[in-house]
Image (tube, rainbow, N blue to C red; front, side):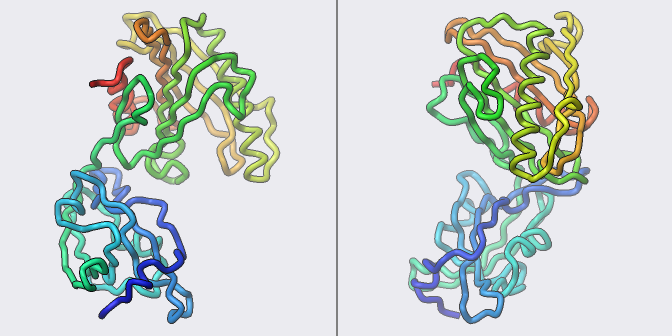
Length: 310
C-alpha cells in the first residue's frame, strides 16, 4: 500500500492523549514503546478514521532503538489494520501491556518514498524525564506521569500567601476511579525565603487550597460542592518518627466527578538555604500508606534536589 505525502499531513481526527503501554495489570511493571501517535483523517472511511502517524519518539526507548521515526505511518498493529478503528480503542486493546511484552508494527516511511517496514518492539520500563530546565531545582519522574506547573498565587486559591511555584506530577490513570493510581500525585512547592510553617499554618493553607480546587472543579464539571464538607487534618511528626517526613494528614475534597474523596498525604520540608527557598514535597493518594503507589511517589520525591545537576 502506498501513501501520498499529503495523507500524512492531513487534518488530525483524534489525538491519542495516552502513551503506548502506559499501564498494565497491578502486579506487573508497566511498559512503553516510547511512541506517541495521532490518528489521520481518512475521507474514504465512514467514520473518517485513518491510519496512525508517529508524533514523537522518545530517546532511549524501544521505538527509537528500532529506528522508528517521527512521521512514520502505522498501517497495522500485530497484523491488524489500523484504518477505520478508533485509535484510542486500538491503543487500549492492543498496545497496553507490561514491560517485556512485544508489539509488531507495520509502517510506511513517507519521507523515504513510502518505504514499507516491519518492526517488533519490546516494551521497556518508562524512562525518566526531568522537570523543566528553566527551574533552578531538579527532580525526575517516569514519562508515564503527567506534569503541570503553576505559579503562586495559585489560580484556584489566590489567598495562599506564598511566592514561588507548584509543580505537580500526576500518576498514570489519575482519573480512573477503579485503578490503584486514582487521584495519586506528587506536589513540589518551591517557596521563596523561609516562611513560617507549622501544622496549623499548613492545615489552613491546605484547607484554602482544597476548597478553592473543589469550587473550580464544580465550575468546570458542572456540580455544586458543599465547601463545608471539605476538611483537612495535619499532624507534625517528630524527626525520629518517619525519616524526613515532617507532616502527615488527610484532606477530604471533591474529585472531578463531584464525589468526596479522602486524600492521605505526607509532607517533607527541605530548607534550600543556598537557593534562598524552602521546598515542601507532598505525596498524596486515596490509597492507604503502604499501598504500591506510595513507593512510586516516594521515588519521585526522593529525586528532588535543591540545585539542578550541572
